[in-house]
Image (cartoon, rainbow, N blue to C red; front, side, top):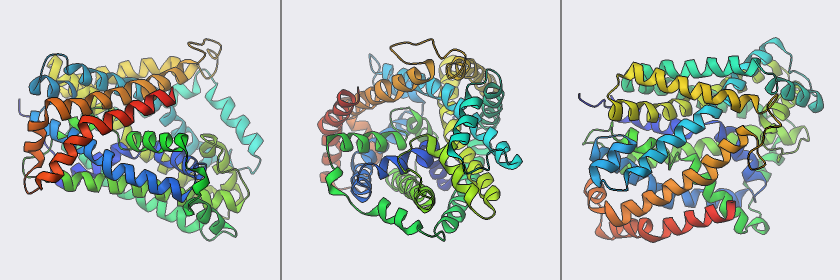
Length: 439
């Protein structure tokens, strides 16, 4: 059976960028940057994205196109032996992440409804905290929204590469940027908003430390969807004529731009009303509704904000489900519809204990963590960085001739040598450092 392909280079770029631009870009990047030196963090994050991030993204895309296979098949066709374990890890990580990511995606659907009915339009952050806590701890309501989000994701993936993923990305990515720009324009007109802009972009060199570098490295790798098998899978749908370097640079540019715009969207409004910019995840579901309650037409902007979150969540969830669906198609010989439905059902079932662990099952702890936090820890702190470390070693020491063949057309030999050196030593050393320090 012939493998699916992207209908256009633009479709591939938007789909790959959409996989990287998720909820983390909207709520995590602003507060991480704000608490880690503002402009200093932005500069370091950008530098990492354009060096290590670019090399690893190119490597994954090249492996996918060279093998014409998904996350597992790529390693089997190019090397065999132990190496397909890296692909299996990527598929497992996507499955685990989507199980609790879908729960959070369901929250965004619920909050669109809460914004529409006005139930969150209050400036009382304590009351908003109570609303949020009561909702996520409810035994049934979050599960219904989790199911709704999972069905949305499934519908796109069942539609296929061109009609489903590419078609959605061509609509959602421009819509996401338009919504962000509208919210930024409104926020910058608030009194005191420019204090937030200055806080965000002014370098605070006193915050540069080992811990800050770890945050920047981790956020760069994870915001670019590296170590998940996504770029390998998406790369396998790329035709031979496409310029992988140009495509990777566009994906990184769009991802970095979205993170920067998210900071401009959130922090000026937060500063204008004197809220804490380092409020963490609560910034999304507690602080931002309080900000909107202060604004004229605040309810409209609240609806727009949570619609934006839903779009960002959906573009990422689709890429996660596509990896496990591609695995089932390639390795088990299933049809796209059967593979996607089966994997989505398993992901939904695993999301049930993740959701309940924030409420009625909250006392059941493993390693001192509830099930939701345990899944997050296993994926973000262990499996993702370990997979990327092994992939870098695979490219540098085992599959370099294949990767060079995909990328070397018109490139200088010196550039190729630098890229291989990154994969052989520098990338594994830095990723290993991240793992040790973060654990």
